[in-house]
Amino acid sequence: MTGERLPIGRRVAYLRAHRKLSQQMLADRLGKSKSWVDKVERGVRSLERVSTIREVAAVLRVDAATLLGDDARPPGAAERTEGVARIRAALSTYGMTAGRDAPPEGLNRAVAHAWNTYRHARYPQVVEQLPELLAEVQRAQAREPQVGRAAVVDAYRVAAALLTKLDETSLAWLAADRAMSAAAGDPVLRACAAVQLGPVLRASARARSVLLAAAYRVAPRDLDSGPPGELSLCGALLVQAARAGDGRAAGELLDEAAELAARVGDGHDHHRTAFGPAAVDVARVAAAVERGDGAEAVARHETAIEADGWRWLPLEQRAAHLVDAARAYLLVGDAEGAAKVLVRAERMAPAEVGHRPAAREVVVRLAAVCPSWASTITFQ
Image 1 (cartoon, rainbow, N blue to C red):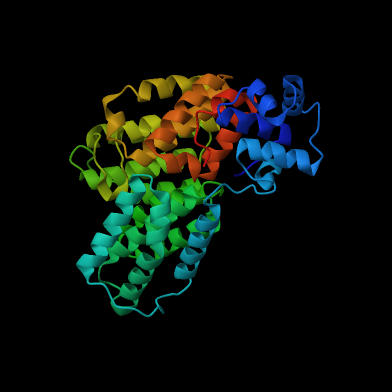
Image 2 (cartoon, rainbow, N blue to C red):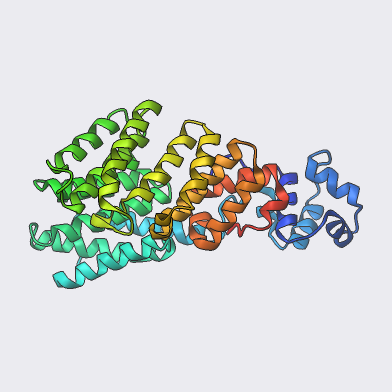
């Protein structure tokens, strides 16, 4: 969990609501008055006695450390931390790992499987797959550097995409950089790698220029007859550049991306970009949220999810968009709207809410302003 920890009273309120207990029900089980529970949740009365904290924790079916906020990591965080450590180790071996080399077709299948798992937002499974996959691609690079480069680039790309989701920025940068190095000399592969470099570079002053250079280098001369793959790469990079620019520049770049998206259409995943009109629509929502325009973001969100292309977006992308939409609703003070889209995201892709730090922060913000709605969300 990222962001500020909730005060203990707010944690009691959140966990009580999550267990679908009323204040009176909690009071009865503790042998206290409803007024006592209300004062604890509002911070008027503090919980200081260890015995009382343990009693409250027992009724709420959590341990005392969780109630106190001493264990800020959700269940499963230890496993994710260990998985990320294994990914870090795999990225540090530089092809020196021992093991049986996978045939090229086997490596291609493994990479495709990792991407498919990621697209379905099964992040814990991708964490498990990546260490061996990275070891395989590094052995392949050491054996024949120029053979199977597309699979190598794609393996590092999916690693960078996952690590970005998990807020492991430095490791995501390393994976994206490895993808760029493996793609050297091939403009299309370089553009592929740059798609994952975008989110990592976003905070950098050079991000926009780097992404635009990659986009225009791969852009076909004739857009009307250009290959869908190259149009998709160019468009996806323009979207990333828009996320790194100011408001006016972002709008212009997204308009440009929309022109390319109209030529590509929805329902495709050329070069692992999932680029099309629907992808540009959700990018406009994210851009509006980032500049603090909640009203525009909400309006665009409600239009985007009604469009035909919405259902063609990968599950991961749809769930991530719903988290952005929840932020938009919070910006306009609509906690109920935020809760509804978060519940939808959690049902659609539980790991997007339970495992992604940015999503968990939105859940915490929602719980702080509307504890009763938090009970409908599985806060893993």
